[in-house]
Length: 300
Image (cartoon, rainbow, N blue to C red; front, top):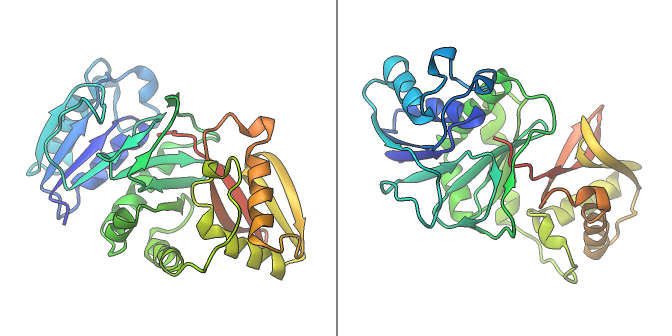
């Protein structure tokens, strides 16, 4: 299905993703794109070793792949700072962006991967406009094992029948780093079913709603959850690392406009403006439902 795949950005997350993708049976060619050299500080969470320090990441990772992972795969090396407009890469069936920056997307990238809190975010939107380029950063302690798990989860999902539908539909999907990989397909199936069967949605556009990328698909689930539970905590961030929390009382959000007004107000608070956007995640914590507004960190 994906004969030739490109991985752009070979840092902490990207190095793990590239190696997991290289192991997939359907992938015959892998395009490695990065302009940077390995530094000592890269050793901790990436796949690089002390011997690699000073080498271009592309060359170091290529050696790792061909010597210990898949000696039969054909590798393409592109050692330059990637730009959708200016960088030329071989025509690929899939382009994965793992750069640790928050940037615009102009149609070349198929999926952007980054970690926010304990969530691996898969952004399949083709075109995203950002006014400024921002450097990504982790909001909580992320270990090498976490990134390895994230890469395994992604490669598993890549082999599922739902992956192509997410690319086609330009949706956003989140995978909890603590989930077992065997439940990923079930989680994606349920999410995709909701996305493909939307209810009629009528609400007035609000200034700032574009800062919540998956707002429309979560309005009714939030209303339903609020209606069914006496208290519903809403975190600005994930529940382990948040800048604010608001507890909704039962039936406080009665209409779609109530949901939009409430969420837009939260993401436009002074402390929330440090991030360009947010993603809604409905989860369970301590036996009850919670809502997390996961910031778009761009950390990879």
